[in-house]
Length: 196
Image (tube, rainbow, N blue to C red; front, side, top):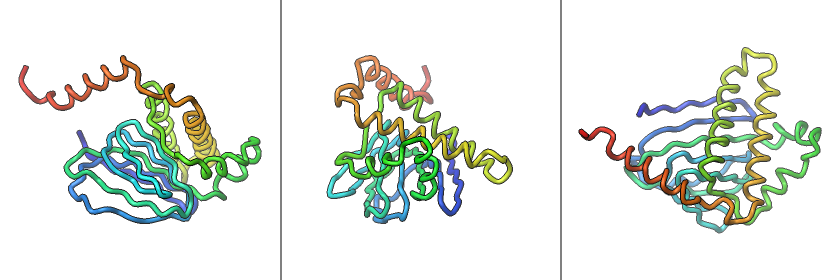
């Protein structure tokens, strides 16, 4: 698998795609003056935020409130792939207000649990949303409607995330088919280079 890191950074909005192997288990403690949304494609990390410890793994999505101190502890020698979006409240305020969603960010920041494990079907939808966001971000300087598309795509991701957090807890739990598919994928990942 090719290791790659991609980033688009502006004053009010950042998106990063990170695909790497963690060789350092030193904790990373920090905060941002912006909201942070993380979607973990591959992960085995612990994150401390708002007096809570989250064990984050494949298919987890998390939102961190602006100015919230958080500490990430990585598991060494593990593959690690994620999308990270940071955005300031002012970046989306006008769009959220015009859509009648002006309380969405406040509602998300007041949640007691700000992470969710997504079903395989929802993972594909969310990952596609982040990929679209990254692709649109790459055209920010050249395409006239790119800024509006980024804001709308980010709103869509926030709405999806909010809906996932509000559904009954057992609805997001992996079903038998998801668990079997996950085991098959893990087997293939571990054995694809071995002779048949």
